[in-house]
Image (tube, rainbow, N blue to C red):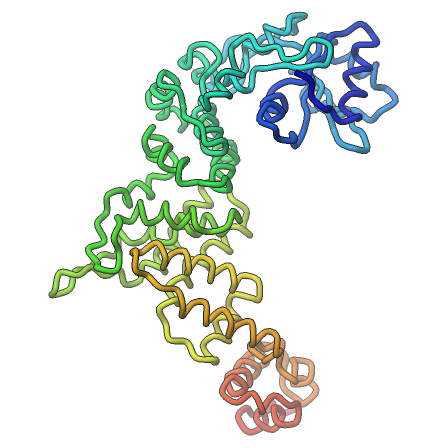
Amino acid sequence: MEFTIPAYVERVLDKLKENGFSAYIVGGSVRDMLLGKTPSDYDVATDALPGEIEELFGEYKTIQVGKKFGTIVVVQKEGNIEVTTFRQDGEYIDGRRPEEVFFSKNLKDDLSRRDFTINAMAYNKETGIIDYFNGAEDLKYNIIKTVGKPEDRFKEDYLRIIRAVRFATQLGFTIEENTLNACKLYSKYLSNISMERIQEEFFKIMTSDKPSLGIRLLKDIGALEVFLPELMEAVGFNQRNPHHENDVFDHTLCVIDRVEPILHLRLAALFHDIGKPHTLTIDEEGVGHFYGHDKLGAKMSKAILKRLKASNEIIDKVSLLIDRHMTQHANLKAKGLKRLLARMGEEEIFTLLKLQKADRSCSNRNAKIDDLIEREEKIKEIIERKEPYSTKHLAINGDDLIKLGYNEGRIIGEILNYLLKRVLEDPDLNEKEKLIQIAKEQFKMSEK
């Protein structure tokens, strides 16, 4: 079997081979090529030592990302290539990285230290596929299986447990029985792994084609209990409401699959009902209600995402979507839609609608979203017509008010907010002279 390799990758392979070294494309790039996909990047393994790699590629910029671990990045215009010396790992003490790394001249040594069989293959044009651990067969039968004993691989780095779930989710594969049992056995040790590393894998699960597969797997192996215990409270939680057919957990999985793979939207879908188990009240007819679960969910999502070391931008966007997701049930007229638009912004208002439509359609088989589609059209009209909905759209600004004689400070914001309120009620008032007159009538100027 022969693959088409980009010229900038061939350049690195050829340079190494011309100088008497072995060189192979390894890992995920081989897996992707066998799946008929174009790899996003290419990694090269070689028997050349790090110093020899640097010397060979002296005409290029090189980066010592992990020289003591054998990795040198060769920078080229078309893309960067990580070139790593064949290696064997020493003993793992902390469940993350080896205490020592030993360089090797043997490709099998290098491939045997990798996590899963589908990631432990090598390729070059002269030799073809090198597959010591039957990775191609596991790829053919859609199986995630560790190289060697799963207990050994997971003890080396417990993050591999979540990586197993991530690959199973992204590829739609099944985790092999012994590997799955080891995941369950060792998932409790994920508490030893930094949240930054867990977050990276978890976010990849969340942006896969069908994230519900990964979330359910994380629950089944006990991983959710370790880093997302709040979500476990949704499992089996009966909503006791005729508008909801599923428990909170299954409803949530439906919603995350139905929204686009935009990270903050998927996270908002995951956490939008996380406050429900804490806000359940039962009315006289035995029907469940969850007053305030949106506000509580927004607060909880902030705490969870801070723990996961998410960026402030992601945290703010997710919490805002959750805080406003229940506006789907409000009968908002033009004025209310403009206020919502001002709060969300022209991009996130449509993200909110995506969440609301998925939330509604996952509630029960007879759910309708016609009103949300109609709302979406009304919002588009407001934007297209450039109707004012925030203070920045007023025909007057803070500088104008200061020139009129108002002091700088809080009073300027109060005046602008009042003028916006009047303009939302009557858009024809949005003329500079009219707004000046209203301001003078309602707010006294400071005495000079």
